[in-house]
Image (tube, rainbow, N blue to C red; front, side):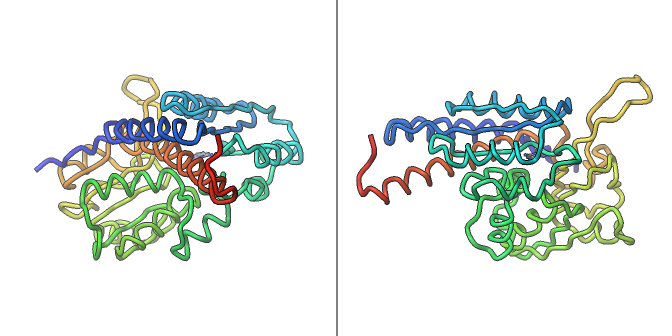
Length: 300
Ligand code: GUN
């Protein structure tokens, strides 16, 4: 039987509608408009598209979007100064620095400069540490989106064997932590794993975030597995000579074997921005609660 195609676009749309309602409520109750500041350094075209799309979606749900476009030659100190200003601005609830950064800027120092309560990407070492020990944390957007799709698909994940292919701090590692919290048995593999097909074959849940187009073959996948393909790779199609987007899993081979699978595009991608908005809303709600807690009364 052919796999169910998991429609991430539809789920993301539903989440955005819920966020729009909650955003209106926050404005009515607290007079607060959740605000997301996005910082783009340099002129990488893909990053520029992602940041523009994040800004558009932010405004569509009724939030305020601030965008800072900085030249690639900017110094790390100047970037950290901007982050400091945004940290100190009570009207800004979420801050994201689009990655990758130019080589002369230390990514770790920059991400650690963001106030952990405004770190809506969930990349700050404090949020990564909290996630690792199972404490409440802001969770990176793509793994959070994958978990929402898996829960929608499978309900309870307890006891299932999940294999994560990819070990980045943005997707693979936090994904493994979330699956562990959901009581899965978790294996983490990557492109250097020697017996990758054998490990993939054990997966009831397979999440592939290796950044390697078409890495996973259909013949590796266990019958009935749920497959989440995080890969977004632009390749040149030899037949047409045109660029197209493909995942890390060979969709046409995997679909007849899996019970459900995300397409690329239209699977995980739309969930990432929806979860960024979810994290921004949560950060704004936390700021409102803190304000309420410290004054004892609701601010006008
Ligand atoms: N670059 C690739 N993915 C991401 C992401 O989720 N957040 C940021 N800030 N940069 C990225």
